[in-house]
Length: 205
Image (cartoon, rainbow, N blue to C red):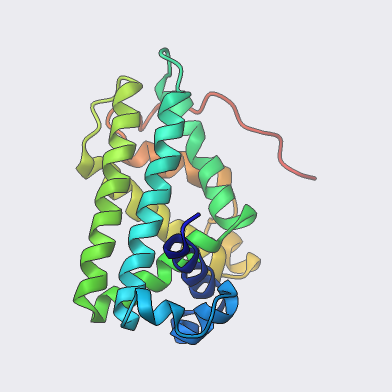
C-alpha cells in the first residue's frame, strides 16, 4: 500500500469513528503512525483530505465490483442479484460500518464544500454504473438512473439502521434487514417488483 492510500484509509477510519470534527492533519498523522506534517505534505487543506477520501472510497468500490464481475457466473439471474443486497446491507451495518459512516460524513461535508461535492459525485456515479452493469449481466434492463435511485434508498435505509434504536426500527417497520435489502432492489430494478426472493435465510432465535 502506498503512503497516500494509507493516509486516505486512515482519514476514512477517523471520519467513521470521530466524525468530521475529528479529521485533522495531525490526527491522521498520529493514527497512521507517520511523522507529523506528512499528511499536510500530501493534502495541504482539509478539503483536499476529504476529496481524496471520497476518491479512495470510489477506487475501493470499483475494485470490489471488478472482483465480483470476474466471479459472476454467466447464468446469473435477477434473484441472484437481489440476494446481494441483504448481504451488502448486513455488511454495511453489522459487519463493518466504517465505509457507510464515513460516507455519511462526506455527504454532510459536501453540502458546504464544492470540491467534496464533486468528488462525492464521482463516487455515486461509479457506484451506479457498476450496479447497472451487474444487473444488466443478469438480463435486467436497468439504467444508471435505476441504480442511482437504488443507492439512494440503500443509503437511507443503512443510516436508519445505524442511527435508530431497535424499538423505533420495529415500530416503523425497519427491523428486518433481509426484507429491506430485497425491497430496495425490487423497488428500483425494472420488472422485479412482484418477483419473490429465491430464498430467505433462517432468522436468529
